[in-house]
Amino acid sequence: MSRRADVVDELSADHRAVAELLARIEKAAPGSAGTGAPPATGPQDAEPSGEPGTPPQAVAGGPVPPGGTGAPPDAPTTGDAPTTGDPADGPAGTADDGVVTLVEALSDLLLSHCTEEEEYLFPAVHEQVPDGGALVFTSLADHLAIGQYLTDLQGLSPGDPAFGPLLDGLGSAVHTHLAEEAERLFPAVRAAMAPELLETLGERLREGRRELPPVTPPAEPAATPEG
Image (cartoon, rainbow, N blue to C red; front, side, top):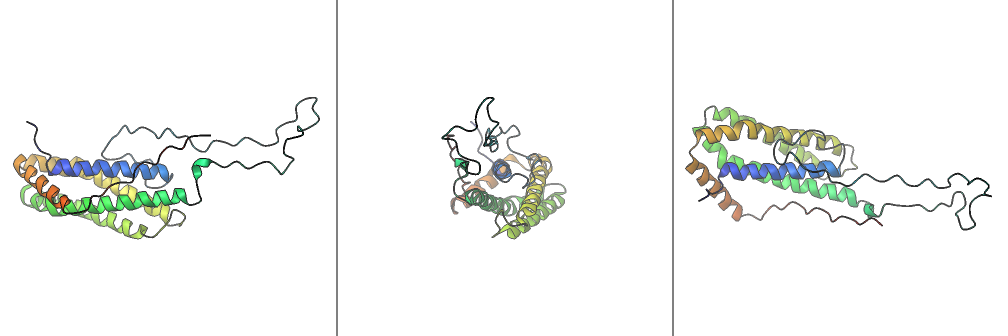
């Protein structure tokens, strides 16, 4: 009979969800959100999106064929070449709106995760884990840094000069936090605390979640067929 998910299982699942959502933001806003820093937890072999960048547009008005007299009669004259947009771009602002939606979802997920750690895990860590106070202090400092970045990002759009640097800072802080807990806090918790207590704490965490509306990350956008 398999055991029920304990508090570390639940919080580790949060870590994976955070890492996946942050990776989506990094794809949607290249150059931001700590691009290049590997996720501290979650899938390490995430597949690339498989969507190449904007394809180069054909150059209008190529060389005149040998022996030709110029462009064919129905070809556009110089300066009248039709403009070709990428239909995947959609209406102006759609891409920025998508990034903002992802950041808002990440904010909800991170705030929920930090609150659950502070309510259901940290008090037991203080009491039962050697050097638990130092471990909790480190995580709480991470929570404060993450919360400040989330506060500063509120109301900003990707076009704001401060958006990119703040998103970079948030990504770096999140990666550091996930790694610190996955490599130090969670192993120390499992080594020091009885499995029965961890399962009890996991059940309490789930009970608390049942009283709150679920935090659901936005769905992946449907692929746009190329015409």
